[in-house]
Image (tube, rainbow, N blue to C red; front, top):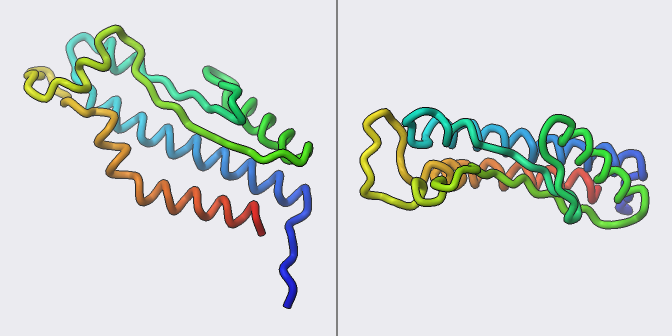
Length: 139
């Protein structure tokens, strides 16, 4: 029995689905991180951001997913490999310190390691998701 390589169209669809899956995983982790972020006035939680990076190009804001999909599909069409990353961040001057200070008290809710904990807790599920996507692409 011979192995069959997926057609260009199938590879593009598989890459598109992988980009969507990575975006969805990023959104789920970011949502959990927002719920866990320390709360005072809500500025920290409101600063949460998801960016998609495809082959080094960064896409954020409205239309980011569509742009990331387009970039991934174009790479496949050009015979290039595709690297997709979801970048999660909190964008205040104190976000990193709030994340790292284990001894700080948060009377209005939240906790330290608010981004790291959801990442670790979801790592096995995300690894499985990405591996399945890679298998779809490789055929």
